[in-house]
Length: 242
Length: 242
DNA sequence: ACCTGAACACCGTTCAAGT
DNA sequence: ACCTGAACACCGTTCAAGT
Image 1 (tube, rainbow over the protein chains, first blue to last red):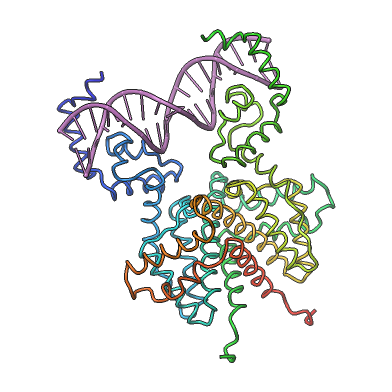
Image 2 (image 1 turned 180 degrees about the vertical axis):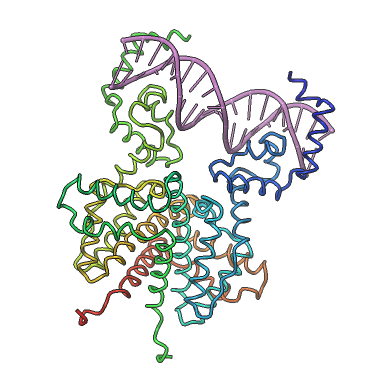
């Protein structure tokens, strides 16, 4: 039945035409849209050139007219996501940075494990420039030394991506249990392992087991961001000096 | 010639025996050793069940007697690496935390992109417990509130892994150029893109382009760690209060 | 220029069968 | 219990050939 692949029957031709009308022909943007939909529903690892191509009723080779390789396609998907980022807002630089951090985190968390792509690709579209400009202006304008401001933005970005990625993987590890049960399970596991290893060898870990495992992922992320902001604030020279 | 696969010729049998003597038979540890060697020479993505098995002159199915799947094997590889970590040292909690951060970073950086495994797997061997106990003791003993100490260790670990992973990927992107050229190239690229996008739309990014791209990876990592330590220090209540 | 079928050189995992 | 060949259902990328 290989002839059917060469010459479509009238029905198959109509079906393909109908599908073509609904989903426009191959294009950079259309391919990114399909790949992003797979990311959103199943995760980055489920994106394959074959699967994306199949949604256009063709083979993987067709995609290579638009993207040099799979990596380039994923970079374009990340760019599309970053473009959708909310602009940071706030009065003082602390508020702007906090707003930025949570905006990026939310954007990444809304697309499963897309955060992992940020380690390999530095997104560099206009949106990133706009947001970076705004943060840098707020920080330097607020008295943060330029080098501290510039380097801190990088540290922040790295921490945000790491937390978003790790948070997704952690949430995937316990799909069956709800939030409360997860916390209890982690506590039980860790304390159990500690006691099994040696009853009194790790007094601090045992004593503070509850605080080590307390807090929701959001609370812990907010804590991390505030920690970094406090670190930056400690390097702002006092006002009266200038 | 499929008979050769079933019944080995005397020569082939001797060759296999010789190989077996040099490399002991299949075992949990021997498999981890081979996988780690592939990580060290080519990176995590180059580890495949087939390649590891081939080094024991067998097929991938043989490995499933020791590891439920590839993920479990990689987790064992990560555990092996973490066990080799140096113990943190120092007098005050700041020194201990800084020593810990650089020890973890060095250990991860010594094994290419192994840091990426830490996002998916929480290593939980005795070594991790020992080190965690030491840091927690130093921090809480130094006056850091327990919850701040506990949560900070997590933030630190996340940042360390993210920097190690991103640092590896960045170094891979410019294998041809040396350090100095890399810095210049990045500056040129970013400034070029900024000017191309809009000459005066991003005054801060253009003005501080040099400081945005200055510093070696090590300097920037040390800055990030000190930023986090400063953030923690800001939450230590003053001595005279107690 | 854009598109494609087929092929190449790989994957992780399973399973029946062997020892 | 440990080990294995073969098979299943996939991969990314290339290339000659088509329009």
